[in-house]
Length: 331
Image 1: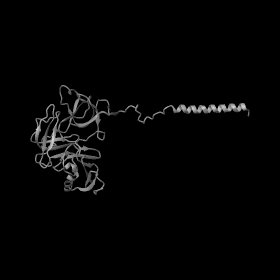
Image 2: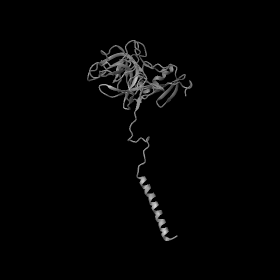
Image 3: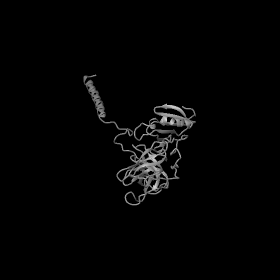
Image 4: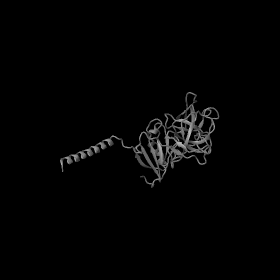
């Protein structure tokens, strides 16, 4: 083979090698495509659509993640003029009749007034906006529940337009409970004598008044009947002693029910020790304690006592699984 042919072949091979190298350099400078599921900051948030209630003339409403879920009895708007009034405006009320939300709900097909519902609402003034119904099992849904505590009122201080008030609720065999009154929810005509009330203590430095239970209603306990507190639903197979109260409505979930209780500042530091004699007296068997929680058994029913962290608004809890245990013996 002549020297000229060899030289030409070498030049061709060198050119091919340079071309391949240049191709790799070019590809390395181009960012790879981002998969759709990578969570890229440029992706837009997805929205879901909630179907309108059966028989509704409303179009499906987008459920906005920023909304808040509120639950209560659907009621007609109590404001008939001025800000907050108007057609297609509704309220949610607690079991004691206190308004806990006011919102616009356009169209027709709403459930009957008095129906317990949970709705997702969008913040607004003077009323909130309806974004969709929230059904059982969906995030934010809370099953209907309530708690009542009864006693004699003393040291009543009426709230004013600029400052809240308070009162003390007392019952024999129980530590007196100081209860706050807000400026936005004053009691009707003051408070005196024997009453039954919904009282919420969790999430606040001091328990606050959330409405009265009139005589002959579900939450009213006749004077002299002990314990002077009850909740719906109540724990299966266990009655709270008179020294303790239900400090908030129970939280009802698909797997368990949970009750926050207040047995007084000293007893709250050792709820397991406080409730142990009562549980034994009512036929429960101790299954032992671990990590600030004690488990008790009665047949295939289980009940757990969880200690409080001690921080304001955090109380001891009674927790009960919904499903029965596999056997009557402790695990």
